[in-house]
Length: 263
Image (cartoon, rainbow, N blue to C red; front, side, top):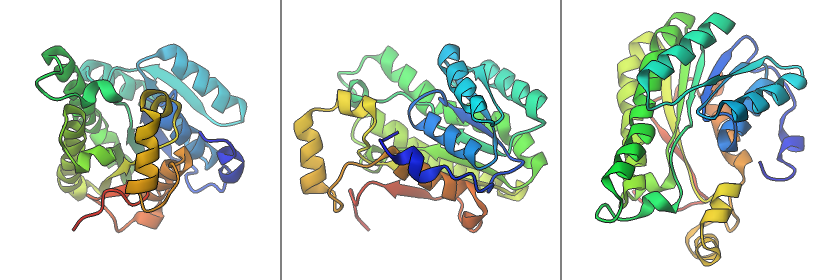
C-alpha cells in the first residue's frame, strides 16, 4: 500500500458489519489491502493464501487492531484445497458473504509470446488465473446463496483488454467468467463484478517492470499522469462489495488512469 493510504482510508465506518470476506492471496499485495480495508469497516476476514506463514502474519496484524481475522492455507488451483478452506471459514465464521478472487500469477514472465512460454508454465498460469476463479466461485456459491446478497469481486487486469500474451488472455478469461458467473448466480441474488487494475505502484510491479516502460505508460498513454496507488484498487473493491453498487453486476471496472480507452 502506498505511503499515506492507510491514514487516508480506514475510518471504520462499519459498512460491512456482520459480513465475512474470503480473500484469496490475501496475505500480501492487493489482497492484504483488501483485507485491511474490509476489516476496518467491520467484516470478519478469512485470508486464503498458498503461503500460510504470510497469511498468518497478515491475520495476526489485523487481529491486533481489534478485528476478527484468521488464515487458511489454500492453493486456488486445487479444488480440494479450496473446498477445505471454505469449509474451515464456514466453521469459523458461520458463512461467507464476500469472495475476492485476487490470487494470480503475473509479472513479465507470463507476458512472453505463446511460442516462448513453456507449456508447463502456461498450464500453471491458466490453472491459477482462470480455473482458480472457477474453483473458488463454485466452492463459495452455496454459502453466498444461503447468506443472501452475496458478492464476488474478481481481479482482472488492464492487459485483459488487449489480450495479446498468455497473461493477458488469462485475464480476458477472468472478464468472461465475471459475466458467466453473474448470469449463473443472479437467481441466487449474488452479484459478480471485476476490477481491471492498470499500472499500479506495487512493489512487485516497480521491481519487475523497466523504468522506461513505466515512464512511457504514465506520460504518453494514460490520461491521468501518475502511477496508480493500491488505494485506487481498494476503493473500487469497497464500492463493488457495498450496497452502493447494488444495481451493478457482470461488469468489469477499469482503474487504469484512462488507458486503454475504446468503444
